[in-house]
Image (cartoon, rainbow, N blue to C red):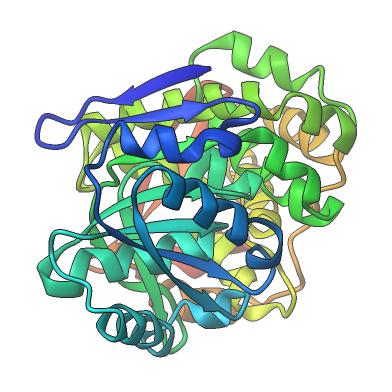
Length: 354
């Protein structure tokens, strides 16, 4: 087992990464929580695979369980989806001394975390991410969110889990597309990391099968890098904003292009912003090609969709990173050297034209 710590002063917690951790989940959770009632939140894809075993683990460890299963997909990450989970908490008589376990991918983690943070002003919760995207990124850091209207992650809280349990073996049940989309976030973290061994690991991953074999190591590197930024800037007002590399343009693609997965959008967004910044002289020539090589090795897209500049500007105006009529873009001087680059909204069309 690999144990990483998110050493926040007010709420430190551990991330446990271990093949087979799901088979002893009850004991891992019992080491953190006293006996209580637990709502396991999952979705219609993950529940048939892991819900019964998770319930059995928790019941054997002395917990009383109830379940809330939402339809799989981003469409559940809404106020209506939250109301559904709230209703299950109320129907099962949950109190502030009880807890929530998020069993699933990023949508489940975001939704369950948001509900836990707001029900009765806060229930304890634990993340059990089952997708690569959630394991390497969204389960760590305490951001919870719902989409609203045309905006992504518009409604949310900062609310840290008590524990994150990552079992790389659970990735074997993912489709190839759902596995490799999470690699977009891995490449993002490696491109920003000052640790050259992280990028060297990625240079050994030349196929989805190789990615699956190295998924635990990818999680270790990505989470360690992210945890350092979270501890330095829990509320996302300074250095943590670097984690948005690829996301400003990526979110636009995710929202405007049907059937685009988040990791695919991040992949396209990283490539688009890096190519733009090379043309503007902000990024060393050849950096985009280095990133593209790692993404293409597993089949992630590297060409940005044919969206117009007005479409992009309209979407970016809704981005939560817009402040004082400026959007803060994340750029790379070169691999391992991320930068925050504010651009006035008035100058954004010209910037995007390259």
